[in-house]
Length: 143
Length: 282
Image 1 (tube, rainbow over the protein chains, first blue to last red):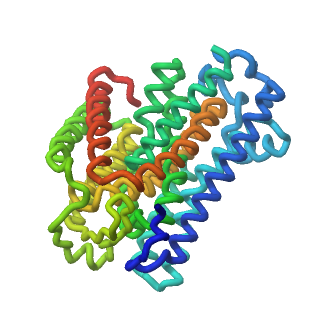
Image 2: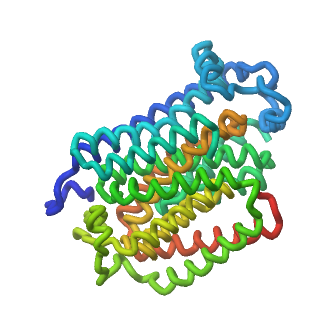
Image 3: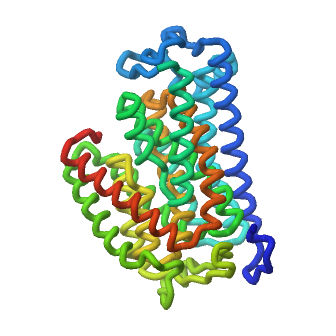
């Protein structure tokens, strides 16, 4: 039985709750879809798009590449975008992961706007602070 | 093992982790990390990177449903995010300076103590007789939700805001420092200290853990710790698992959720103590 089926003495869903839930839902569905496309491309083409990794052997796929230098998969946003546009399977998956990481950030940014519209100064300050810390740690690599 | 077998196994195990995570407000790291590193021999860095992905996927996947069904306390979550994000940044900054292994043991013992407190209230569906604190009223943290398992509206009041805030700061610190266990601490802070109903605690924790994890996801991504081949089955499996987990939570009684949480709490506590004694944390 869903909650909305019963008589509801508490106020119905607010626009903010609806918007947050929609953003989260679309964020995960979109990133899930992109990751799925990436893994299907990998399975069909038997290539990662990054020549250094042989796509047939699990041991090579799982080997830790970071210590052996870049080039095994993209680790910067511009590399991911360029690679995904070029149709490289690993870059498409990484793009999906970036969409996943961006989803909570978009959610926080959106709540700032909703509290602004409600003129709820206390919560504008609270959510703005969280957004600032989040963006600072995302972009400076601290955290 | 064939790559396809690996993919399907990790997908299945991640689905289980997503279900449990959606139910209990955790990121599933306590399943993902040991599974990848011990069972499949994946490098510890990749295992941690995958667990960050699993936390964000669990959070957004589950919270989409819980926010719509109005179980999540949005204000409580957003207010406490101030504590968790600053705690996480401080944790990452001092990660090399503090004795991680000692802290892991200490926090493990703290969890064991919380397990004892939780054990005594294991039959409780919703807290009763809680007098909300003035600070919680000023912050408008009190709430109400429709509980399908109880068939009624549950109204609740929040108390001990400073203590809960402090515990949340620690939860953030731990996740920045040790990379594990932050969801468990969040649920404990809201349930045992602030006296939110268990379902509100787990769903609000679910709502929050994505933000804490996203703050540290950037560094893992640029460092090359998030391998596409490992992240893909984890993310897809988790998302599938959260769908089942959110349906399950609505139908379960609060007392049942508490008992499942109690088991996971004890496992996490022992894991942290063992990790501290044997090493193996960053």
